Structures are given as structure tokens and as C-alpha cells.
Image 1 (cartoon, each protein chain N blue to C red):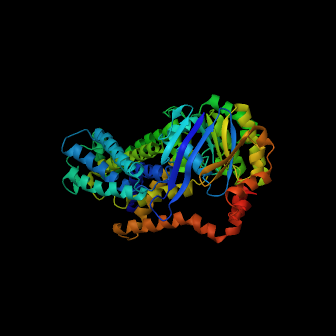
Image 2: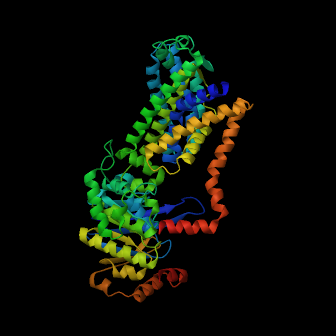
Length: 264
Length: 315
């Protein structure tokens, strides 16, 4: 499904701020995998997702999506296969546009935009149905500006938008980190529902170890731009937060007490 | 009587400048891009329209279309500089604007061109009407009335076009680009192109407006665009203040038209009060700066109350 082969990425090359963020990273996702990604600050989790999405190209290495090399494809061309939800609830939607207009744009992900009217009647009926599944009452507010919604509502909407047109791969970049705990749980439940009902291959970055264990069939831990732990199936189900912390402690030689605090 | 006549002239001028203000509205409010190309493309429209009529004997209305097309080209150059060559937005506009100044001088071969001896968009209509003395009005009043008529017709056509265009799939993507371009790319749209198309339409309309102004006032001037962006912004701001409740896009554009007219009426009145024409840009700049800073100043005054209100609004 998705192959990352020996990827390297350095930021601010040849400056004092040079940082090797992704260091010979390889990863293979199978169809239907729901993988949670954990790691401390600067481990390269978001960078990995951005490389897959094509926000920037890797310095070396190859990215294959569904058998096709997308390594050098620009972001907007890869978008037809990818659903994305960002950490910042403001990132995934256009605030000054209506809920239905945002959905209409997502519905056309990957197709050419012409001079046809931007939204049709049949679509609106579909959007009402889809918004009902969120159970947030948004179906009553189709023509409201998205800027009027709360962060949680916007994330739920972005999640719906990212899967309105079935993506080959869903990328969730700490999409609940900016939400309060209750709303975060709600959005996570919704994520689980959408992922399992559409059988989506998913990569979900999270700061929260409990979430990482609770959701998905596979877990990877990143450290200094590499995958240092990759676990799935029964073994993953039986993981405890303390196991993960210990593993993290071992690889980082206990020197990153700060990271431990962030992770716990 | 004289005061009324100058206000009447102001209304007509406001109508011919409406399309200019709408062009600025597209970049400033929809694309969220401060585009200075407009100052060059406005004069470009006037120059090309005047030269086509005077030197090549072209139909004045054909010259308007030529201006529209060349203006779109100017906008595309700015868009190319900004998106493909990664030059900052303001600077891209300044570069095109500066280049256009020389080009406009080349086109006309001189700093200004008179159309008095030629057919213009205005004279073609005037020739079909009875003369001013037959109608019992001053010649200047007749000319102003025809200018007004042309301004209304063109403004309505442009507003209808923009209303349709920004409702299409492509137009929606351009609107969203001004909002959040990362989101638009995530939806599979090349935001370089949405920006280039937006700038092209904006500057095409601005050049059309420049041509229409030239055709109705009877001369083209290479310096007509200097400082024009503040006039466009003033029209937008006046329109937004008057139509602050407007949600419908067509009404917002209608607000820009009203803003453009009111701006010209204010100018006519201020000039009658004894101000010099050359002071107008400064006065306009001060008014626009004040109007644009109101939201910031209002926020500073009551930081707590504002923030609470904001939270209420989104939760």
C-alpha cells in the first residue's frame, strides 16, 4: 500500500540550524492498517506525514503509494489519494466559507475544477446525511461560515471532509491535540467509526500513549528520525503505557526526561 | 447648482471607477493579496485603449476588450513572479507596476494622449442622441449622463460575471485560497494557478476600468494609476461600512459600487471646500488607514470582553 524506502530529510541544510529530521526511515503499510505513531518532540512524526503528503520532497529515498512512485509529485497532485487532518483545527477548513462550500470542495478532491456551479442540489442532500453521522447538529447549519464553529466541530468537519471522497490513505497529524479532553475523545471515537466503516488505511500521529495503544492494529515509535519500535496484533493489544515509556527510556538512554513528561 | 453638477459628475466618475474598485476587491478581500499591479494595469488599460482608437482607428468598444486582455496578462506576470519565482506578494506587484510604467509610455509614445478628435465609447452614443441644445441641457451634463449610463451598464455586467464566476468550482477554489491555501492544496488544487487566475481577472477588470475612464474623460494619462490603490481601498471600506450586514456576495459587490460613488461625491465636496486636487491622495490615504485600523484599535480597548465574545462565538 504505502512504502517509504530509506528516506532522508534535513532542514536548514548548510546553516547553523541544520537538522537531520528523518534519518534513513523505512516503513511499509499494508492495506487496511491503522497505525498509530508516537515519539517525542522533534522525532520526525509530523515531518514523515508531510513527506508522504508532499508538503516538501525528501532529500533521498523513495515514496510509493499503491504501487506508484509519488516521491517527486507536488502536494496538490498527491491529494487525490490522501485524506488529511491537521493538528491545528484552523488548517483543514476555509473559515470564511460555508460548511457546505467546504464540503463541496472536499467532494471534488482529485477531480478537475471547471466552470460548473460549485455545489449541486443532490450533493447538498448527501452532505446533510453525512453531517448527521457527526451528531453535532451541523446539518442544520449548512450555510453557516466554518469560522463560527468551535475547534472540535471544525476537526470533526475536517475529518468528514478528508473521507468524503474515499482516500487511499488517511493521515491524521495529532488531530486531537488542540482539543479539550472531552472533545478529543469524541473526535477520536468518530475517527474510529469512520476508519473502520470505510476500511481506511490510516496513519495517526499522537502525543498520547494511551490513545496510541487503544486505537489501531499497529503502533510505531519514532526517535531521531527513525522507527525504533514497531508492534502489532496481540502484542500491541497487551502493551501498557509503562512498557512504552521503558522502551523509550532505553533508546534515549534516559537523557530526555522532558520528552518522557510530554509523552506521559 | 454648480455644487450639484460637480456631485453629478462625481457619481458618473464613481461608476466608471467601480470596476477598478471591484478588481482591487478581488485581490485585497478575496485572494487576501495586496496587489500593487493595479496601479500599472489601470494606466495600461487607458493607454492601450487610447492608442488603438487614435493611431489605429479601432472601434472604442473593441479597445475595451483589448485592455481587458492585456490587463489579464499583467496580472498573470505578477502571479508568475509570486508563485513560480517565490517573490513576495507586494514586491511582485511593485515590479510589474514599475515595468508597466515604461511599457505604457512606449505604447503611447508620450505621457498622455487626447481622444478629443476621435470617436470614443462616449461619442459613439452621443452621436446617436439629440444634441445638448436640442435637449435643453448643458453639453457637460449630457456627457456626464452618458458616462453614468456606461458606468452602470459595465458595472452590472462585471458584478453579474463575478457573482457567477466565484460560485463555480474554480471560483470557490480561488476564494478558499485567500482563506487557507494549505487546505486548498490538500483538496488537490494547485494554488499557484488559483492565485494566477485571481490576479489575472482582477487586473483584467482594472485595465477595463482604465480604458472606460479614458474613453469617457477623453484622454489617457500615464500617471492615472499612481496612488489609485488607495481610491480602490477607500471605495471598498466605505461599501463595507454601509453594507456591514451584507452576507450575499452580490450585495457586497454592490456595496463596493456604492462606496466608489460616495467616495467621488465626497471628493467633489471636499474640492469645493477649497482643497487642492493634489491633496486628495493624502486625505484618502489617511481615511483608509483610519478605517482599516478600527478593528485593531477596537480590540485593544477591551481585550478581555473581546476575547470572551470571541470564545462565545466559536463554541
